[in-house]
Amino acid sequence: MSTAVSTAPEQSTTRAGAVRSWKTPITLAVLAVFALLVFAIGAPGNEVTFRLSDPGDAIVLPPIVIFAPVMGWIGAVIMLAAAALAFVQIRAGRPVPGWLIAVFAVVFVAAFLSWIVGSARTPNVALYGLLAGSVTLAVPLIFGSLSGVLCERSGVINIAIEGQLLFGAFSAAVAGSLSGSAFVGLLAAAVGGVLVSLVLAVFSIKYLVNQVIVGVVLNVLVSGLTGFLFSTVLSADAGTWNSPPRLPVISIPFLSDIPIIGPILFEQTIVGYLMYVAVAVIYVGLFHTKWGLRTRAVGEHPKAADTLGVKVNRMRFMNVSLAGVVAGLGGAFFTLVSVSSFGRDMTAGQGYIALAALIFGRWNPIGAFFAALLFGFATNLQYVLSFLGTPVPNQFLAMLPYIVTIFAVAGLVGRSRAPAANGVPYIKG
Image: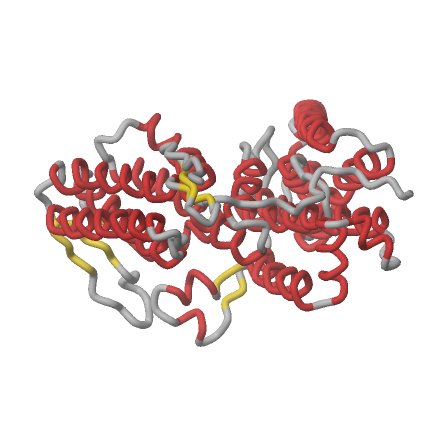
């Protein structure tokens, strides 16, 4: 007796009935062909210089000089081979290994940088500055994505990350200005994030309102409220209400002198160091503690957790509030680290990119951390390329972070599964 076998281009079915998705190899193949046409065949005939250290550093490293066409052809060959291997893996019924996608991404970025920097008026870029700026710009994204992890692992969709970041930034600016202390502003940012989270928790958990709608409404509400207060109060007397001091940069002795990574990782404000602590604590807490087990239980199967004595809605309420603290600290970055004042809608949609980083990172704190770094790199690359004077239109450069977001989530992330009870309110009994 014969069985029908689907031959759709997106996925096919093996004899054992397992579904094979062709999305990842097709995406890699398209990008590899694009790299061949643009980075290899269309490569500029210039040498590209990547500076690895500042001339004033304790240890000065020699720059890396690459001939753009050579890098383009090597990168294209490697990417075509990776795409072919991905097709072989899927055809054999095996998943595409994560290391293959990582190698493909690194080679694509290297070939892209060689092509676009080689096309600039000045084919010379400080690689250490590009990486340092990427980590700095990723700080609020990391805090925002961690906030989303805490909520969604508990079963509550957090669309309100944008509002939490924005109100955290606003609270930090006002409290820091009135007190004259950046650390008071940092504490106020955490409180501001909690206030937004409490509204999300009350309406979504207690009153069972659709969580996506609550999140969108909160973002609009916070945007309107902070915009109104900015135009009527903060702008009228900026010296009193909108002049917070900056957080000092703390340099760790010896570690900050390590070439390339030292200034990037070990010359941070307290917000930067709290970012590392938050990633480690949330990861260990989620996967190696009793609290983490209960959190994942209420996000996957709340009824079973309730049967075992876990207070499902209390756990969700607590974790959503904790997520507000995390997002609020990320909001403080904008007004206490980046600039010393609050501006209307200054988060500029980064809460939504943090949500994409959360999905790309598969609801895992470590994955969300690296996904946020990728989006921070894309954002900083936009600024660096604009400064170098590349022939690429500024409009495309402005789109770059969002193009990376779309490709990452829709093209390369593969089949991601959110927690089973995510977005589903729990009614006891």
